[in-house]
Image (tube, rainbow, N blue to C red; front, side):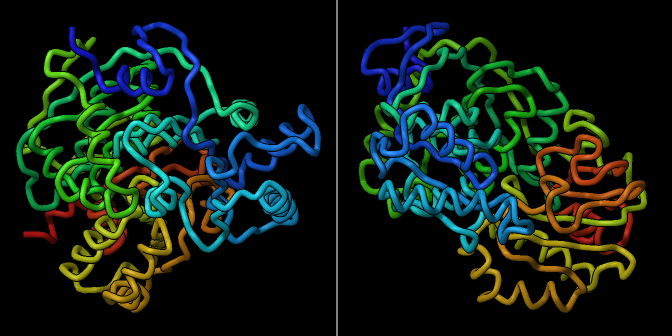
Amino acid sequence: MGKTAIVKIMERAAGRPVQVGERVWCKVDLASARDFGGANCVLQFEKEMGKDARVWDPDKVAYTFDLQAPSHSEKVSNNQKIIREFAKRQGIRHLFDINHGIGQHVMLEAGLIKPGDVVLGTDSHMNLLGAVGAFATGVGNSDVAASYINGTSWFRVPETMKIEVNGTFQKGVCMRDLLTKIVGDLGAGGMDYLAVEFTGETIDDANLAERITLCSMITEMSGKVPLIMPSGKVLDWLVERSGDEVVERVKTLSADPDATYCKVLSYDVSDLVPMASCPDAPDNVKPVTEIAGTHVDQVHIGSCSNGRYEDIEAAYEVLQAGGGKVDPHTRVIITPSTTEVQLQCVKNGLAAAFLEAGIVFTNPTCALCTAEHYGALPSGDVGVATNNRNFIGKVGKGSHTYLLSPMAAMATAINGYITDPRDFLK
C-alpha cells in the first residue's frame, strides 16, 4: 500500500515507519515564534530550565515581529525586547525585526523552509507553509518552549484528504474564490485534523502566491496541514532560496500513486464565479453577485492569505480598469506581506498609483487581522478584507466583515459597495 505525503514527512522526522493514528515524536526543523507569544516562550523556557539553559540548536529557532510592527504600546515593546535579548544571549541569528513582514512569508523568502520540514509556530496559520510541502503547524507557547530543550515535538499522524483541481479561471476569478468555495462546501469542521493534498492541472500551474492563498484557510476548516509539493517555477524559486536539496525531497516525499485517502474531492474552476465569506464566519459563503450593492465603510487588502505581489498587482489592475480612484467615502488600506513585496510594489509604480488613488499603503505586517492594529473598525461599520477570518468583533467590537478576493475588494473600494470585479474586467 502506498504512502501519503504526510506519512512520508513524519517518517522522515520520526526516523522510523509510522501509521495513521499513531502518536509519534518528531524532530523539529524550525521552531518559530512571533512578537505575540514569543516573549512567553522565552520566559517559560527560562523558568523551567534556568537562565543559563541553552536552546538545542540556535540555527533552528526563529522569531518574527509581524503582528504589531512597529510596536504601538509599551507592553508590546517590552515583549519584543525580551525576545531580542534572548536571541542575542543564545546566538539566534534568525530574528526578523519590525522591518521584515509576515513571519511565514519572511521565512520562506529567507530560505528557511523546505519540503518535508517540521515547523512549529505560535500562529494558527503557520500551516500555510504547506504551500511548499512543509509540515508546519501552529502550536501553543508551551510546545514551542518545550521544543527548545531537545528539538522535538509529538503529533498524531493524520489521515489525508485529496482535493483535485482542474480547469482555468475566468477573468476576474482567482484562487481565493476557489478557496472560499471549498470553505463553504466543507464548513468549519470539514477537515477535522486532516492533512489535505492539493493536486491537478490548476495546482500544477499555480504560482507561489496562489498556492499560499489556497493553503491559508485550512485552519478555518479545522485541518491540520495542507500540502502542495513544489513544481515548475515554484520549485525553481525554492531551490534558489533553500538549495538543491529541495529537488530530492520533492521526489522522495511526494505521495505514492497508490496512496490511500479518506476522501477525494474534485473541482473544476472553469465555471467558478467570485465568492465571498459573509459575516460573521468564513464558511458563510455566497457568490458575490448575491451581496453586490452592500455598503462598505472600509476595505483592506493584505494579510498572510493575500499579501503577495501577485495579489496586490491583481488589485492594481482592477483599480486601473476602474479609473484609478477609489470612492472618497471609503477607507482603503493595502498592506504588502513582506519588505521584498513592498519594494517590488514601489519599483513597479504600484505604490505611487495607490497613494494617488487615495489609498493608504502601509509597511508590511499582519495588519488588520485583529483589532490590535491601526485601522480597527468602529461599532456598526462594515468592512471588506482579504484576511482569513471574519468573526464578529475581530477587527472591532460591533463591526462586521466580508472576505473577498483582492480583485473583488478593489472593485468594492472603487464603488464604495460590494462589487463583482468582472464589472470592470470585461
